[in-house]
Image 1 (cartoon, rainbow over the protein chains, first blue to last red):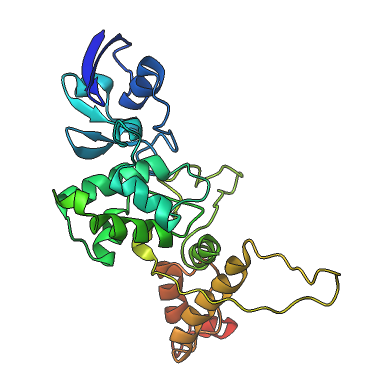
Image 2 (image 1 turned 120 degrees about the vertical axis):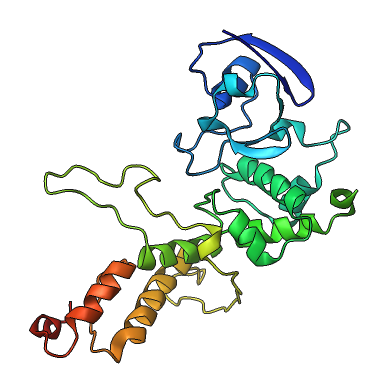
Length: 157
Length: 118
């Protein structure tokens, strides 16, 4: 079946099997492999993307469910001149990653969280990130990254 | 270091690979296996100390996951200490709520099973 959607501002139209998951559509049909597949069971959050600005785990959304919608992946976060998005910049500043596997999902989840709650407390961030797992960092620097990003003027425009 | 601390905490409180009597794994996905998240953990304060080892020329020691080595017994001992006044002498790791609850009940006065401390 033909599934159309906008990915990072670019219209996409691909013929895929009806059962195709959004994450496979993004990785295999569109060719954007920044969105990782971790658990395939909606537990780990590595595949988190924004669907119409709100975070979803793309391993449990059918591509067909996102037809006509606006998807943002990690590839769509930096500005066109290469300047990092404030959440990405905060991860760099705070060393919010080690192996990096959870990072795209963490960046997308935090971006969505900060949209809902622009001035979160540390506890708000910790509760908001419950669905995104990280084995390396102990979350300390990821939480710090979210709090630093929340103080970026760019996040409050 | 932070990740090691988190993994030790998780090992003490939550994480366990479980098999049934036939050896089938019962914790093969994150839906069955309790993996620690940011919600269960606090922030950490880390300090550096320098104690060179005398047994090699550089004085170097492994560091990578030393957080794990300390945090698991610290957490486990804290749980055991918290219920020691109820007569509990031992709780198997990980100290899940049901294990702590059972240990408290088994240690209750009049329950001989509690004398074995399990």
